[in-house]
Image 1 (cartoon, rainbow, N blue to C red):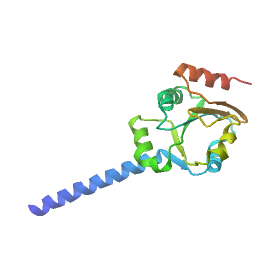
Image 2: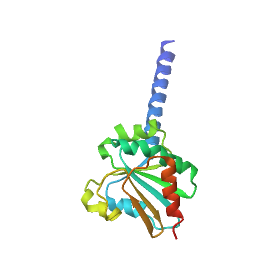
Image 3: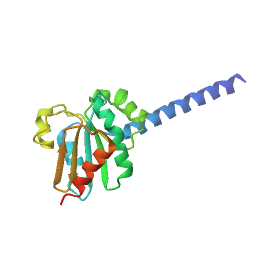
Image 4: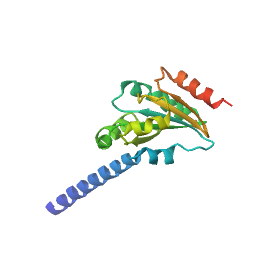
Length: 169
């Protein structure tokens, strides 16, 4: 009957809307946004027993994108480290660029968005010599830290860099 056909169409429509909402909520959960460097530092730059590999990157940075698979492999293969990918994309690009980028590339590492655009106020807090160029990687373990303002040519180079940091006494 016409009524059951309309009811079925409405049910399908509602189901479709529910799926879209659920998918977008799940996508947004993939990215924690920090509006200020201080919030980011307080929540991410933690001095504990873990080894953190914090990569600063952006979706518009070709060398950053080229090396992301190395960080993903490090995240899945090296259980001694916690990989955190810190996007420096614009906050307005979160839904249209960053989240679709993460989903398309199926990134499994933790992704954060550092939306603090007052770079001059915080770059030197990450490393006194950082010019602001990306990709850049910060290694943290307790009070020990090491910073690389460069891109890695391959996974082996990144893994060796991280392991030499871990083995520093």
